[in-house]
Amino acid sequence: MFTLSEETIEVHREINKLPKVQQFLSSKSRGAIFNNHDYKTSLAYLYQFLVSTSKYSGLTLETIIDSINNKSIDVYKFLDEFVAFLHTKKLAQARYLTGVKSYLQYHDIDIVSHKFRLRVTLPKIPREDEVPIDQDDIRKILLQCHNRRLKTYLLVLASSGVRAVEGCSLRVCDIHFESPTRIHVRAQYSKTKRPRDVFISNEAARYLKEWIELRFGIIFDTNKKISQQINDSIPSFRQPRS
Image 1 (cartoon, rainbow, N blue to C red):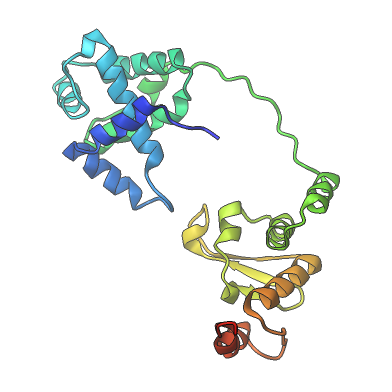
Image 2 (image 1 turned 90 degrees about the horizontal axis):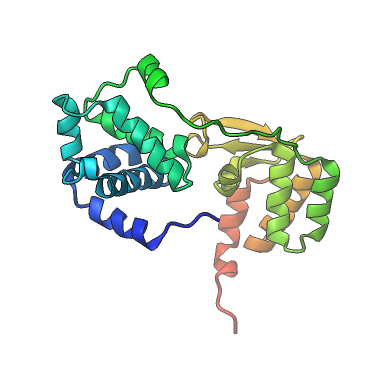
């Protein structure tokens, strides 16, 4: 798992104090499910670039905007030098460059696409074709899983094709035990920000039923809504043990 250096974490704390940075990050956080961490890290590396480059010494994440707007700094040359800085640090250039571009454009700095492509050079990244896991791989994973809750989750992912966070966001009321069983993915947890319904296998549905019975202490009844069955069981389910 990727972790930030102590230096970058400290820079996060410093840039949080800047009003223009706060305004930008606050705006971006409204469009994300979790947070604006990538944008903040992009600005942290931009801060390190300004500090470590003598040409831009004395400039901050706020004053650099004024310098670019009054044409004392060429935005394309500046971004190209930033890419070179990221390259020397062996960081993901495209990822953090996108965050910095978004920050500059948010503060009314125009970046023309065709000029950007001509004047800012990103290193070529060798790509290999991705090979998806097949049924045998999925079967091996499931056979090695002995945790009831995790196995149910893996079966739902494997049979429905939903993303990991979409599977974690499922509520009991989002599961419709019909034939076949249907689950509802809410818009706020979908990558496309649109709700959708997907179907799961009979095996995944069986494990879901068993997990609901185990979790809420009920006997599944197809003639009653699950939420009603759970509500009816809550008093006995929460009763302290003698």
